[in-house]
Length: 222
Image 1 (cartoon, rainbow, N blue to C red):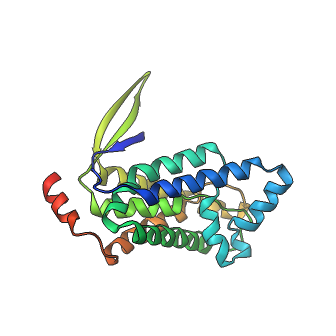
Image 2: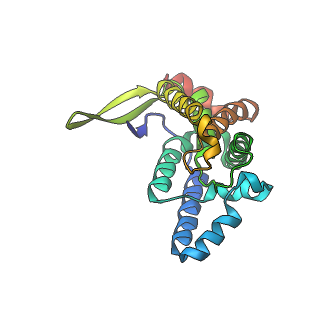
């Protein structure tokens, strides 16, 4: 199931979401332009490596990606959910929110992989935070999903709460399933970073001020 769009209208232009997407794309294009040795050096400096923990890579790693599909998938999810969260937080608070979620996700990943020397990259922890905020603010919005049915492809509208809780459950059970293989030092998906980012987003959206116009929109569209 691939999310195509959501039904929740945004009352402001998502400048920060668009800028974050542009920065991620620009950094990735620079990354893939490097020859192999320089690329490995670049990643060793700016990717997050739990066994060599430092604060700077917790921030820089969220702007790096491991491939085109990794980048496209993350940016697509950010575009679907980010505009509405930016709308209720405002541009400045939304940027701070996004970065804090990314750092929280990185911290959780480090906590579960203290001796790992595998570089970790990607915006998915920060984007998971955006999804957690979306769950609390727009649970009754509809997400249009692209669903393959045997040899056919169709679309269905599903409540956002169901889509996001299902996504979170996948992260949890996948993460638990890989705990026993953590010692193998292999690359893979940072499942617990996703969970950490998601929960951080839920917590932060509760304590950060949101625009009052959200209440009017909620009454109008729910």
